[in-house]
Length: 88
Image (spheres, helix red, strand yellow):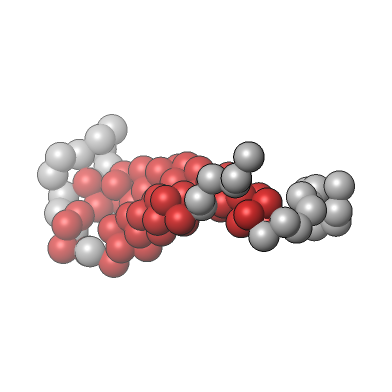
């Protein structure tokens, strides 16, 4: 049985990593006071909201990248690796 291609997974990984990098750089997007949330201006609570969102995107990209590496290794006939990077 041939190994499935990991190219699509690598593309998804790249797409998942773009928003956590690009959105914080677009300060004009969130440099405003309204709407406020519990008295905090939009500027502050939006930045705090970015933290868990960026973490979720990054963790998802990490697990997809692990699967892509596994597929790449299988396609080349290399043994699978465990969590420490050693052969299974």
